Structure formats: C-alpha cells, structure tokens
Length: 125
Image 1 (cartoon, rainbow, N blue to C red):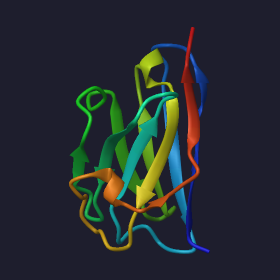
Image 2 (cartoon, rainbow, N blue to C red):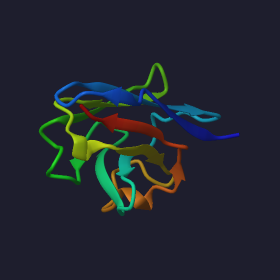
Image 3 (cartoon, rainbow, N blue to C red):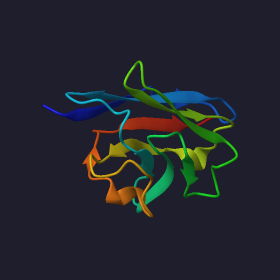
C-alpha cells in the first residue's frame, strides 16, 4: 500500500528547532514533488513549501520561508522540513503531501492528493 508517514513532531520551547520527516512506503518519492502544509486548531489549512523532483523549491508562506527549509534525501525515500526559531503560532499538525501526477510543484500544495496522517508540533513556553 502506498502511503506517506510523517514523524519528528513534538513539544518545544519558542526559539527551538525541529526537523520533520516524511517517508514514503510502497513507492519511491524521487520522481514526484512533495509539499508540506499545516493546520492549527480552529484554523484553515496553510500551505508552506514544496520541493520538486529536481530539487526546485517553491515557497507558499512568507511567514516561515526564512525559518523553514525543505530538503529531500532520495536514498532514504524521505523529504524533510527543518524548522528553526519556532514560535507559538507555528503550533499545528504538519502534513506532507505528494502526487504521482506531479514532478513539479503545483500552484497549490493542496493539489497534491496523497497525504500522510500528520505529526503534531507544539511550541509553548
């Protein structure tokens, strides 16, 4: 069965860092774009960033583009989201997404239709 699994979330203090992982099983990620989005309690989903199969990065959220970095390690079939200088407003469930129709990043991360189950990130003092 093809699926994405996120990990690496947790509880951190403001200013700290986390690195989220998105691992694919049942298929290889290297040919497809992978994006990240998040959803905070009571708020709409917010798209963050995407990396294409060739490594091109598309940022969707100005609020995090100087603090969050996406990368991929095709040898591990994994895409990462490195998050620095975390703030309480970054508290959310973070999801990765991909789609076998897309090697390039789409105009919206939500056009990538295969999602993981999410990983909780909580930033609190």
